Amino acid sequence: MANASLKNLQQGLKSAAAPEPPKIEAAPLANRRPDRQGKTHLGGWFSRTYSSSLRLIQAKHPEKDLQSLFSEALNDLFTKYNVPTIER
Image 1 (cartoon, rainbow, N blue to C red):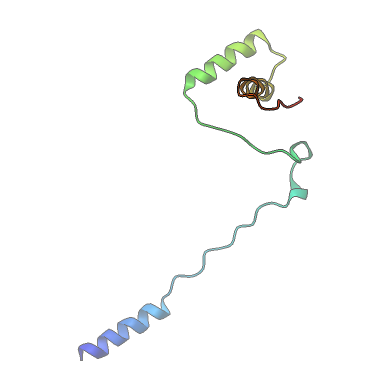
Image 2 (image 1 turned 120 degrees about the vertical axis):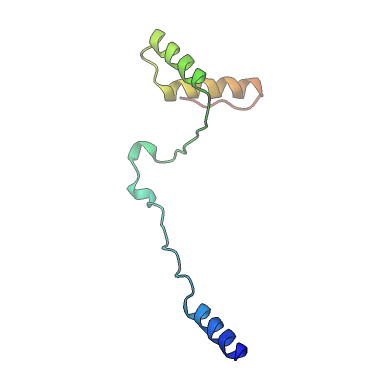
C-alpha cells in the first residue's frame, strides 16, 4: 500500500510541473531613442554627498548637465591612467 501511494505522489508531482516562465525580449535597437543609438548606459550607486557636490558644480555652471560632467570626469580619469580620451 505504501508503494501505491508513493507512485501516486510521484505521478502527481510530474503532472504538476511548474510552467515555463514567460520569455522577455529586449526592445529592438530600431525602437530605441535616436539620441541613444550606439551608446551604452553607465551607472553606479554613490553616497548623497556625490550628488550634492555635482549640484554645487551645476549651480556655478548651469550650462553643464550631468552627462557632460560625467564625460569630463571620465576623460580626467582616462588621462590619469594614460588611456585615450573621448571627444565630446
